[in-house]
Length: 136
Image (cartoon, rainbow, N blue to C red; front, side):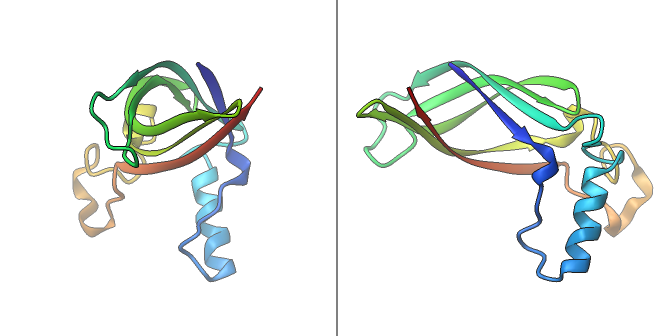
C-alpha cells in the first residue's frame, strides 16, 4: 500500500526549449481549462493492490499496481504493470501508465467532446512515468 502525492505547481514541459513558450504552455495547463492548480494543487494516487505477474522476466514488469487516482477532484480506479522490489528495507517501483484525461473532467480541446476542432484537437491520453523509492 501507499500514497503518492504530486505537487501540480511543479509541472514542467520538458520538450519545450523556449522559456517563453514553456511558460505559456505550463500556464495554460495549470489553468482552469486543464488542471486548475489553484483549486487543485495536488493529484493523488492511492495504491489499493499490488499483484505479482506470474512468470515475469527478471528485468521486466513483475507486478500489476491498482489504485485510485485523483486529478482535479475526480477519482478513478486505474491499473498498470510495473517493476517492483524490496532490497535492504528499501522498496522501489518504476513504470508508466497511460491516462485518459477526459475521465477526470479535462475535456478542453478533446475531439471526443468537440467535433469541429480539426487539427487543433489535443490528445485525450497522457503518459505518467514514475520512479518511486520508499524507505522505512
